[in-house]
Length: 302
Ligand code: 13P
Ligand code: SF4
Image (cartoon, rainbow, N blue to C red; front, side, top):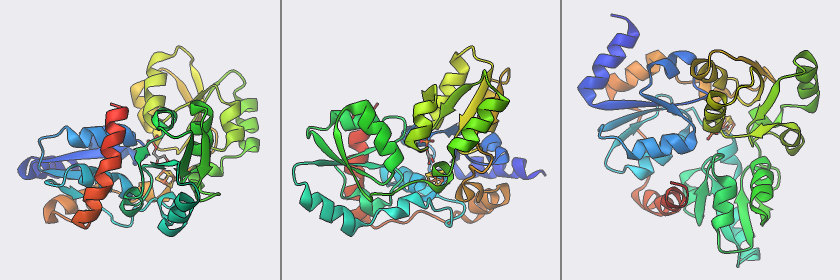
């Protein structure tokens, strides 16, 4: 039996669902029950009758699914699939900024550790950051850890943001350079530029559209433009080609690769289903306290 068939058979046996992020390798995206961005995956995790979620993404995404579904078994097929940006926010630093700005509410990017989320008033994703920041009661908002997403959220909300840590960023997106953008534009002068809000403000300002990975999928389905320059992790290209195959997609940077997103493979998924591990295992009190700001986000951004 092919590995895909063995995965499908075991998935039925275990009453499991496979969720995958848009940056996963093509083979994983192709066997998943649902592929999406962080917000879509969080929502999908709450809308399944399956008893087990095999989460093909990075740690904070699987943790979010587990926090929203304490009664389900949530498995991350490789526990080393850890988002480096989520590690950049230190709780002590955040607490100290919160002490200095007692009136400000705290919005944290979903790309944070569960423990950090316990200190947030609300969570956001790249799909709803300006909307969530705008919905906060305070005029000043503490925001972390991605300063590039912070720029996008500040611009879109009109609020004053205090970014913590000051230089937080996603290494895969932050390294996409103006030189690469200029070279890509020269090679494809009529192409439409679509970038993720984790790229630098300089790149955001030169783009035609700034969108989450799910937003990019919806955009390419809708627009008539035939050539697109894509500024995000290159795993999205497989998804875009599947969703709108009649267009040409060019990555602005072929170096925009998230190694942690590539750690999940079909053999690891099969082994996870066979052994029913490795599971996301968070202390119940952390789950309880981290759930509140995530649920607030889902209410503000249904
Ligand atoms: P999206 O929510 O847009 O898929 O982004 C997730 C992410 O980790 C981007 O680097
Ligand atoms: Fe984290 Fe960046 Fe990888 Fe997204 S692409 S999971 S933000 S390191």
